[in-house]
Structure formats: structure tokens, C-alpha cells
Image (cartoon, rainbow, N blue to C red; front, side):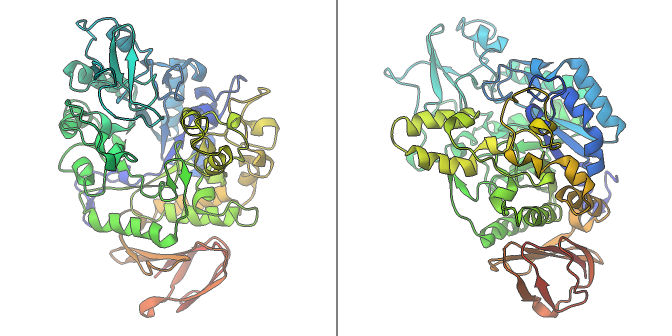
Length: 562
């Protein structure tokens, strides 16, 4: 892969711009020891599957020692592997297997908060003057109340009273996830050291969890009423955020050829260059939530339209220049399945719509991220009762919304079936054997989707027309087509309610991508006398080369060279 000062269409070529990333949620990927929980050795056993698919980088969700209040995002020891996932030699073997297959690995960096069982917090509770006393954010009560009105993303106040220390500590997430005090240089030094620990092992970068929240306004003013429903815009506005990210780059990242991607909840498009402009030396790219939150408001599902979706991509393309790089993703461990969210999960159209989404994901501008199981067209789980869920966010909101009788239970469950994070966390569907081949245990940690006998990797590997093999073909096409990476983007019909039609152009290479986001058979005349040119790929047998008009089947995708 070309690096350095070589450019394409004005962009500086970098390896992390030209890869496709595949996210692995270890708990749900493959269980190797029969305890019902996925583990590192299970991932190692499936590396050939991932190599065959054609992905370049594996993103490993948190694998660190954790009591699992939030499935590993509450870290007890950053230098130890979670017991359920295996041992450090297991991690080393996984990384070795990845490198042997000419792939790369990035890991989660979760440093806005730790577990309350981390030794730093255990010691911080004990004294207001000890070594670790200000590793976290402690404040006295405010006239018998919490220090301010900040709320947790997992319901309730973002402050909890610690009886041992006699003060409140801040936790933007669960009560067992106290926020670190980044204003303490010792904390920042600890973070940089743990980053170096994993980089020394040979990892290739970090996905940085809620990284915009690391800096806090030391005065802790109340959150204004107009931001009550979206406090992330307040939490992401700390005064020293960019100072700390530039320090992190200077002290650690600049010394390695790695990729960094930040989870950017609370960051607007206008603020994006502050994080990713290559001249600022902070992060390579960030995850925005405009697309994945298009059809939800908090835990509530809401309708969306195709022009709204297209407008997001157009806006990002228009506002970000050649010094700013983007990500493209439709799902991850915090979001439902894309076929259920943006496609059609019905028996008739699941495969077709999954292929349309794959085509879009792998031809839009930015580094694409695939979440495990999306290459099979996995769908949302049919949750029927609150006991079916594992997610702490769901359980806390049930207590806050339903048990207080503010929301009807059936209304809550209706929305959660569409929006819950647990939709993406059900075990990977490998074959049609019991528990989909995920585990030999009688019961996995989270129920396997009942569709596993029809939707599974074994069946799809054998079917040349499967979603998996379509993803594989798309990945091969993207690797040899720089226009899909660096090419100019133009939406040809932004207001069309059913069709997403755009071009990607790099010098003499010009491609037309046609996506039918509907169950309608459509006829469409191309604008400006444009002709289709040579058909490169069709998801449903379309032809019509060198044509002025298109005749599209329901949920069909085509790519033409024009």
C-alpha cells in the first residue's frame, strides 16, 4: 500500500484510508471452551473466515479485565485480559495469527472512565490527600444535592455519593464507571503508558471510546435546559480537549504508524476538523452518529427518509476538505442491525437489501467499518420481554421510565425491539447446529437469534449468491478501485425518495452507483444525457449497458463504469 507524500485526487495516501475494518465483539463472536461466552481463542479459530472475506483490519472491542457492568467498557486492569476471554498468551496468539494473514488489529481505548474496581479508584476513595486522590472527579454536595444537574447516559444523575470518602464522584455512564480526571498530569501519563504497552505488543492503533468527553469544565455549571435531551454536546465541550489530544499524539501516536478513530458523540460536523485535520496532529478520523441515529431519538425509534440519509453524506462531503478524512458505518456494538434499520428484514427482501447496503457502505467516501454478522445479513432479535435484554442502558431506562409509570411497558418494548444495542450483540451465527455453532454450552450468555438455521456462515459460504459472497466481491472490487476511496462524490438525484444514485470519479475513472431502496420495480431516466456504461456489478442480475434509462428490481444495486 502506497504511503507518504504520494497523493490521489489531492488526498495524501495513507494505509488507514484504504482499508476495510471489521469490528469483533469478543463476547458474541465464538466460544472456544464451552462456557457460553465468546473468547480470544474463538476469534483465532475464525481468522481464515475473516481473511477469506477480505477485510484488512480487525477492531477488537474491549478485551481487558473487567467486572462487566457495561460488557467490558468498565475496565479494572488495562494490562490484563478479561478472564472470560482468556489469557495474555491467548491475546498474543491472536495477534500473531492476524499478522501471519497480513491483517492488522486495533483495540478499544477506554480512558474517559474506568471501573470502580480499578485500583486507582479503590485508593482514590480512601483519602482526599493520597497519591490517587485526584485521579477521578470528586466534588462536595451542593446544599444536600449532587454538585450539578448533569445526567448519566444510563439514566439518573451523573453523580454518586461515596460514603467512604464523603463526596460525590462523576460518572457520565454507569455508577460503576467513574470518570477519570484528565486535568491531573499523572492520569494522562498513566494513559500514555498503557497505550505504549499495547503498541509494543504490535497492535496497529486504537478506537477511542467517547474520547471527546475527557476534558471537563472545572466549574461544572449546570447543563442548560435546551441541552437536557442531548447533554453530549455539553460533555464534549471541555476546555482542554484538543490540548490533551495533541499531547497524546506528541507523546505516543507520532512514534508509530498506526490508525486512530475516535467515537465522537457530541461533536458536530463543524467541529470535526478540530479532531481530524491532518495538520493538527490529533486523530485520523472519528465516528459521527448522524446516520445511525437518523431513525432514533434516545431509546425511541422514529421514521426516516432516504433524502434525509443522502443529505447527511452530501453535507459531510461538502464541508470536509482534502485534509479531513471520514468514516462510513451503518452499525456497531451500540446500534441495531443495518438490514433491520435501513433495509428490509423480511424473508423476501433481507438478502437483497443487505446487498444494497453493502454496496453503499463500500463505495461511499471514507474508511468503511463492518460489524460482525452484517456480512451475513443478520437481523434484529425479536425481544418479547424485559428479561430478554442484557444491556445496562435498557435495564436502567426500564426502571426510570416504565417502573415509574411514565411509559407503558409495551410502548417501551416496541421501540427497544428496533433500537436496543442488544440487537447487535446476539451471538454470531456460524451454522445450523444448536446455538448456531457459537458455543457447545447449553445456554449462551445472550440468546441466539432464532433465524440461525436460515442465516448462518456455513450456508452462505456455500451459496455463491449469498450476502457473504456479495460482501466478498464488493471488498475485492474496492481494493482495486481507488475511485471508491479517493474519488469525487456527486449525488445525482438527492430528492429522489427511492433511489440513491451517485458517481465516484478519480481522473479518468468514473463509476455510477445505483441503489434502489424500495420494494418497487422502478424505471428511471438518467439525468443530463448520462449513459450507464459498462456494468461492473449487479446484485440482482441487471444489465442495461450503455443505456439512458434504468429498469430496476426491488432492492437492487448496480455499479457501472462510465
